[in-house]
Length: 134
Image (tube, rainbow, N blue to C red):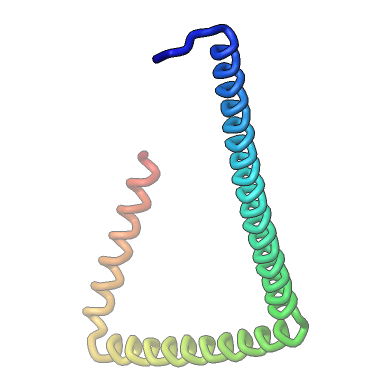
C-alpha cells in the first residue's frame, strides 16, 4: 500500500520541494507584476495631478496678469471716480435737504428747537462726565 523506502521518500520530498519552489516563484512573479502595475498607476496619477496643478497655476497667473494690467487698473480707477462723484452728489443733496428741513423746523418751532438742543447738550455732558469718573 504505502512505499516508505528511502528512495521513494527522497523522490517524493524532492518532487514536493520542486513544486513548492515553482509555486513560490509563480507567487513572486504575480506579486512583482501587481507591484509594477500599482507603481505605473501611481505614476500616472501623479503625472495627471502634476499636469492639472500646472494648468491651474498657468490659469491663475493669466488671471493675475489680466487683473493687474494697466487697462484694467485704469478702468477700475475710472469706475471708482464715477462712484465717488455720485456718492459726493448724494451726500451733498442729503445734507442740503436736511439743512433746509432743520432751518424750517427751527423757524416754525423756535422754543422747541432750543429745548431739544438743551436736552441734547445735557445728555452729552452727562455721558462725558460719567466717562471722566471711570
